[in-house]
Image (cartoon, rainbow, N blue to C red; front, side, top):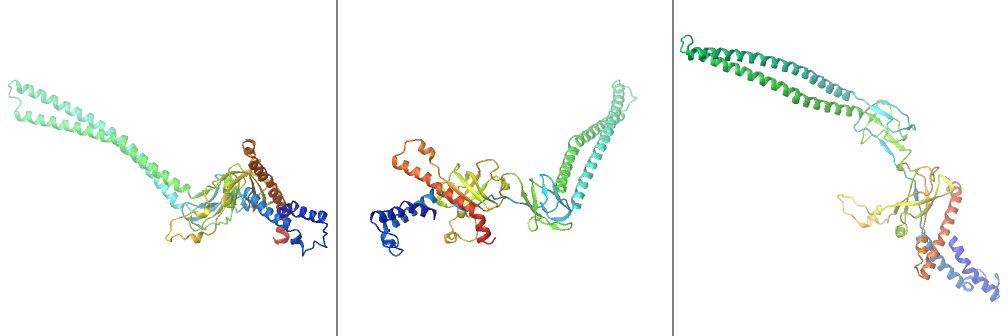
Length: 413
């Protein structure tokens, strides 16, 4: 309507003034509702053509959408495993901080596993003490075996010396017995040394490995025990949280509630996502200036700037299935997803996350015009494109003024 009124001011109105003052025709006499088309045909035709052209230029170079809002992410409150609720630490609607416990599950099995792992560590500690005693015993046995070997070798040396002198005091059988005794004593020394080596290996390699394995089992059991207490991952507010002691919570079928973040990009307080027509893909770029009006903050126009344009249209996504794709099922074109952030700090402070918003994007050719290397026709066209953006800005402000009236009076909400 605004475009039609503006176009009529430079088409129908001059035509009427010409008919009235130049040709002397008067309204209600020669110019009536029945003769209007014939008398003002040139102005009406020019007005319609100019209106269509103006609307096309405005909506193409300064696109608008009602599919916008500060979308936010909700975090489901789920344990990693199912179980019965043992204790609830917060209530529905409470504000929580990062790391604050929310609820706990029955942990009898996990506590038993922790106690078992701790008892295994105690057993390994006792095995260390026993191995130390065995090492001392093996060392004492080695000293005893070495002493017995030295005594046997000394006795064999004396008897062998007497036998070498030709004396008949020592028989050959006695010498063989002494040699066997020395060999037996040497075997005892070797056995004692082997026992020492075995005890040292037990202390330095086997038991530390067993202790490390038991420590890992204890850590694993402790992690499983810690998972029975569910903590808040971010600052936020719990919602739909109506747990009671004894309720069964399952990570797939039975969530405990949701957590609404109160800070960060996912909270919906720092950016707005909008879905523009695909025709605006050549116009909207990162850095484009936009304006939004949100239902939760009426009478306010918030200046924004485009920070990211999604490189794909979500309506064209595919995923493997057992049914072949039929293009007819995707007749809906989909929109161009654009992410915007406030141009000034605190712009979305009073806008509730999830609010319904209207967004306008404005094409600016200022930098291109500043270069000065364009032709006259192109320069005039770009000036005209930048100027007609005022029309959309006026329309947006009219929508901001009429939004409460439209929603409360006409829509009955």
